Image (cartoon, rainbow, N blue to C red; front, side, top):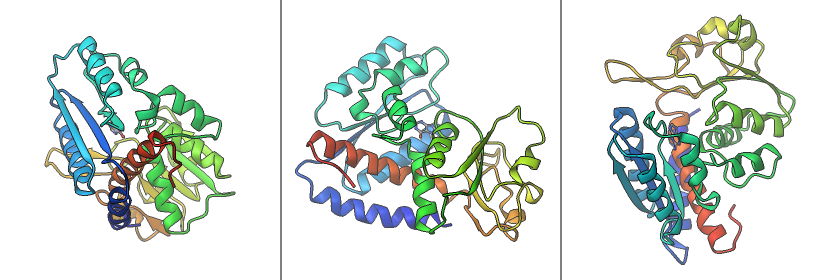
Length: 279
Ligand code: GUN
């Protein structure tokens, strides 16, 4: 499954949608600290946002930024009418309480879908903003006409950003869902039961060919930057390729879909600010 291709298609659609709006969508991206991986992700998000005609506001703050200062930055962005979406890149420095910052973002501008208001709406099946990565995963499976209803899905990784919201979305699509975490015993025994396997741990090559069933769909949501600078996923792609019916590569799989969904969520924020429904 080629996430880069599907993301490019989506970006072309988004260019048209942006040009037909009465105002230019604005996305604020806040980065605290100098984590090299976060710097690369954030720069990429800003670049794609500008490429589709949106306005980006990139705020880079030093590692020493206090929680109070970050709360003030978010508060200013909440008030700013030219900003429709706010993204504070995670992880934040240890001195800052992540949940406090997430909860300070206006739920109407929470294009990450991390605010408890949006998490709660997702959990009862009346979602507003969906987290970008799980939304991108479902979009890609739908694009390739892979049905979820009645399927056995195994999600490896139970983070708030990916594993938990993905499991909820799969449940809502009628899948039977098993969620594994780092303490799960006999992981390959469980992953081999999956019609569709999702792995989101950041442990390189956690999923080998012995971890999947013949004909399984394998979705690699892991991302790990090796010492050589190369990006690898959770799945041993070469080993699993002959056995899987569909598989996503890293890079070029879910990563580009996540960015496309960030753009879609930003458009959704603009539409709701205009009192209109998007999509
Ligand atoms: N860090 C890793 N993934 C994400 C994401 O989707 N959003 C934010 N804000 N931070 C992240």
